[in-house]
Image 1 (tube, rainbow, N blue to C red):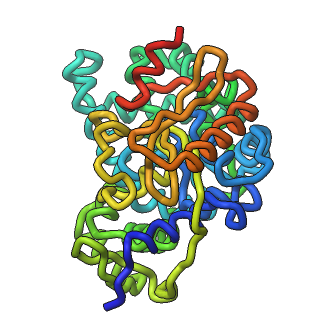
Image 2 (cartoon, helix red, strand yellow):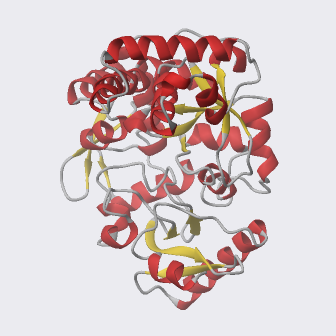
Length: 383
């Protein structure tokens, strides 16, 4: 059995994730495909993730890919998380991870509307509200905001259930987050029927084929990874993951510390990465959230860099390991906060990267609802 050391895993990460010069993506669509998907729970994250991977990236590049070219689409999928998907990957997600989320969401809403006294029959309420929302959106090809839908469909009963219904319909691939009515750091989309947003809507893949397609893409982006990594990342069952690994012909490899990881059969050759590199990544970046078993790149720092619910804050990287985080002061200037000692020359390189990010942000401050413990002291100093 081939053995993949932690050093090689970090080299793969650097190259496959486009975090080093010479491996940057050509554009934001290519950067997203290289990562399989980009996290989009926080509206600023895809922009900052693209900035780290695409030389010369500007915000308008992502806006154009999402709202004009529509090569990238926001879709609720794995673990009930919002991701920016390459358009060609949508059928795989719709038929597998998204369908699983949609079933769970519907079941919970049907139960909760009865508990909250909104309806006596949750199933009937769901069917009626779902039909009303879809019918209304059919009359508005440009889409409607959640507030406009709530005003037009009183049965939705308030902002909480409006959001949950739209979440469920999004997971069903009936509606999509369309044009954003706010700036890049705030998400207030016009919800739009999927057939209005995409000129052609392909059929979802059958569940097993969908999971296999996602696992194939994930193994290229994140492999070698363990079965536990895949079960967590997909939000799927062990049975689904094992069937997908078999379907793509995944090959087991040994990992440092024991245990087995998986690689695609055509991806067994060693990957050589750069000798020295640094990077700054945003809250919930796809790299730091790519695996469940994170010791090989986090070391002992998970409690400082993740909140209690497992959400990653900002991260500062050196040679494939996380050594700190980054924050902004009241003026918007970026500063690195280390959680371990690094050589003076490395600290200087991280400071250069912080200055580069400060220049790109141009005084705009990026808020977050997921600050890590390492970020909090600096955040508490800001107004």
